[in-house]
Length: 157
Image 1: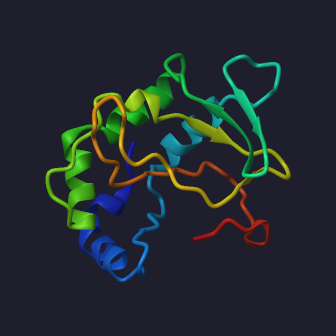
Image 2 (image 1 turned 180 degrees about the horizontal axis):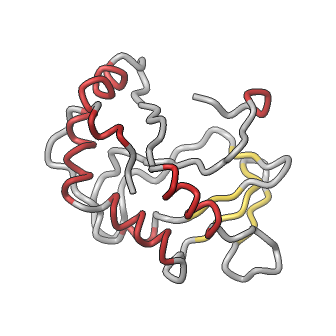
Image 3 (image 1 turned 135 degrees about the horizontal axis):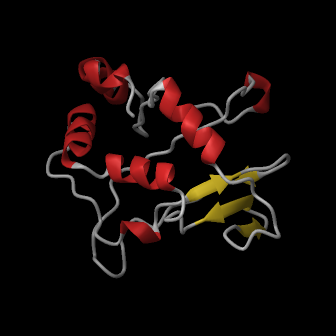
């Protein structure tokens, strides 16, 4: 499922440390090509008539979100893979942060986002303390499944 980046943790750690005041790392080929293709083909097309999707349209955002992905096995497998101890160990090594945990109520903050043409997500602050568990969010993982993204579309880190 995960690509060969797991063999390059030291260089990813260096990239993270040198990324500037707001730390981030871009991991090319995060997923194997085959698994990325599976996710891309399984990704549901956002439509206002599809009850699984919630349409958001306000001054900050114009997008579709889906919080319940339990009926999409490949998505569930990917989320579960990112929540296993081995994966968390990779993130700890990349970021230099110890003792990371997965928030036990993560299913409330893990989901799909889809942007259609003219979609947007303005600058915002994610909730950083879970009200139910008291756990502080330390990192956010974003996986892009765009096949033919062009630089002129914007959105690059």
